[in-house]
Amino acid sequence: MKQAIIIRQDLKLPKGKAAAQAAHAAVEAVLRSEKSIVKDWRAQGMAKIVLKVADERELLKYNQLAKDVGLKTAVITDAGKTVVEPGTRTCIAIGPEEDDLIDTIISELKLY
Image (cartoon, rainbow, N blue to C red; front, side, top):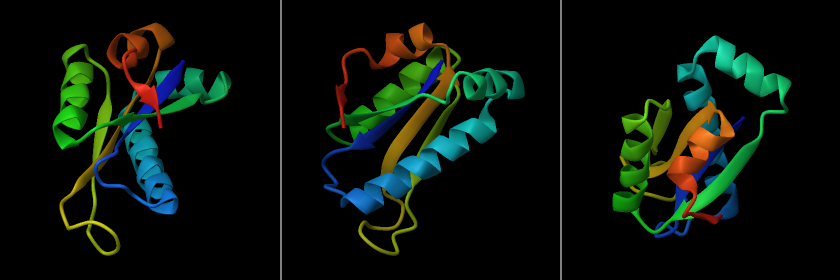
């Protein structure tokens, strides 16, 4: 099992900001997931993969693809207090869920 976190590249987020946004996405997606899935994922080491997309359009495309197959997702919208404008969608998380199901969505993406 794993969780996928996808970050926009066009925002050119500093490393710390990207890490914080990824953490927000990871936590929010777990909170939306079934307890039994989270329990299994935790027992297997809580694997995560961080990937990149070009822009918001692509980010939302992958979010919708995941939702279309029944995966839990979380879209993170920044408050705009530091680096980006308020309301900027920075990243998403998909899962946790079985590897093969996550892979059907993210197989074309590159590592962050």
